[in-house]
Amino acid sequence: MNKFFTTTVFLTLLATNLVRSQEPLLTKQEAVSLALENNFGIKVAKNQVAIADNNSGILNSGYLPILTANAGADYNRDDSTIEFPGQFLQDSLGLPLLDPTSGNPVSRPDIELDKAEAQRYNGGLTANYTLFDGLGRLYNYKRLKEQYQLSELQARETIENTMLQLFSIYFEVARLTENENVLQQALEISTQRITRAEYAFEYGQNTKLDILNAQVDVTNDSINLLNTRQQLANVKRDLNVVLSQNLNETFAVDTLVQFTPKLQLETFVSQAVLNNVAVLQTEKNLNITAYDIKVNQSGYLPTIGLNGSYGWNLNQSAASAFFPGTNNETWNFGLGASLTWNLFDGGGTMVRVKNAKIAYENQELLKQQVLLEVERDIQNAMAIYENRLTIFEIQEQNVRTNQNNFIRSKEQFQLGRITSIEFRQAQINLLNAQTNKNLAKYDAKLAEIQLLQLTGQLLNVTL
Picture 1 (tube, rainbow, N blue to C red):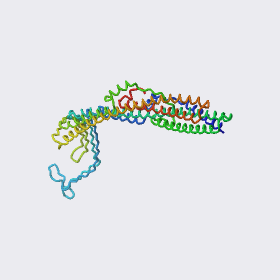
Picture 2 (spheres, rainbow, N blue to C red):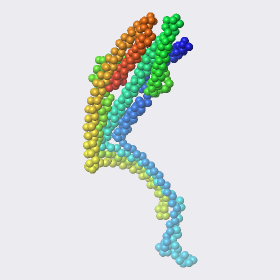
Picture 3 (cartoon, rainbow, N blue to C red):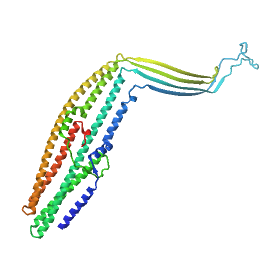
Picture 4 (cartoon, rainbow, N blue to C red):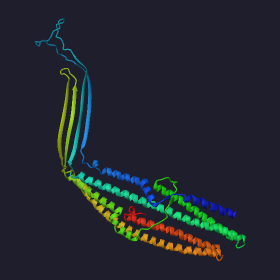
């Protein structure tokens, strides 16, 4: 039964290792490329930039004329009867004509007009162009350019946040991968202990208790390994969400970590105000509010415009009782100029200018606040990074110490000089040291990435 248990665990490990060895490697650069290409949040941000680009173009500037075409057609049909009550026919001398039979004057007959049709057609072009509007459209055009650059910075911020999320998950996958290897080695050692304990029991060198202790350790190591593999599978699905790909996509990750040289980091920190995305956004917002003031001040100045028209009309009238039908076709061309000066609009322009100046002052205060917060965040991030880097170095030394201790404990255990409990304790100490080192390594790297984001260099360095 014990041998069957040991064999089952070994075969399970072997099958899992075979599957893992066949997984393709997803490098950090490939992960970044996939995120930039597929991530939904980044796609939305890029579409927002495209909208801002359209808004800042000449077609939305107000500098182009407005050209309007119009056309129309009307049709009328009349059926009418015209009566002449009290009127009589006259002869050439102007005397009433008499009916030869009755001798009475002859009444004037009615006139009937059937299907009297009339048509009317027209078409024309009208052009309007503003020569001067108090420089309002000029400053609005510049404002839209600043708005476009602000949308680019907002997209960059989205990309940086996505990259930070990406590497947080990527390094978690790497950490769990290394932990899995550590736990797997621990399980193999515990499995070998069962075999050794069984042989020793058969030759009467130990008791059944050593076998039971080894089996308990194998069970605990198996559970820890299974839990780690489950966590690893879940985190890989999280990474697939960020990459916007199939949730069941399998891959291995690069566990090699290289830290940015300290001198280069100090250079980045010294230039952070020039590159931090939050600071750059406040500067763009400051420029936008400055243009808002000038746009509103344009209401104090007059507006000068030109207009022109070109048209064609055709009227086809039906014949009437007294006049024949006519066709009247006309062409017209007109030019005009206009000047509009709103001398007083009830104080609305003055209020808008005052409010725009207050908004500019608020934006200046917000910039000072952002500068202070960014400086604080950078100092905190630098301190956290240096602290975590130191912890990682300590954990590396701790692993070396525990490795030496474990090797000597293993030799002593094989010689029968220490108990299995003491050997297990040395194994647990090494296991904890290795997992703590893995955690410290990736914590330090994430702290570096957060520092790079604050200095505005996250997208400019190779991680």
